Length: 132
View (tube, rainbow, N blue to C red):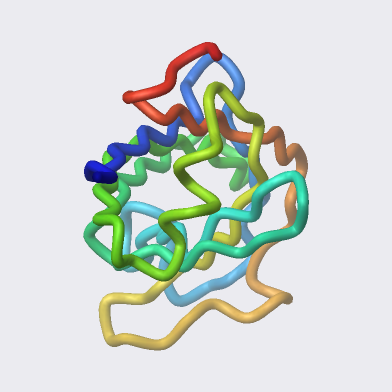
C-alpha cells in the first residue's frame, strides 16, 4: 500500500531569484506578495501549488528596485492525488517554478511590472526518498 509523500521545496537565500521592480503601485513586501503557483519538473510535468503550500519572502537588495525572492514549503501528496506518481519518483531534484506577484487588492503584476535578473532552479526533495 502506498503512503503519503511529503515534498519539500526550497529556493534558499544563498541563491535567490532576483527581480528588478518597475511597477509604481507598490513593491514586494509593500503591497505585493510573491506567490509560487506551480513547480515544473525536469520532464516538463507541471505541478500546481495551492496558495498556502509555499512561504515566499522578498527582500530589497539595493535602492534601485532590485529584490531577492526566496521560498520554502512542505506539500503532502496522498496516493490518490493526481500528481502523486510524478512526486513519488523524485529524490533531490532541481525544479523550475512559476511565480507571480499578487497585489493586496487581488490583481497580479503584469509582465511589464518587473524584470527577472536571475532565476536559479529550486530544489524539491521527496522526504521519503531523499538523495536516492
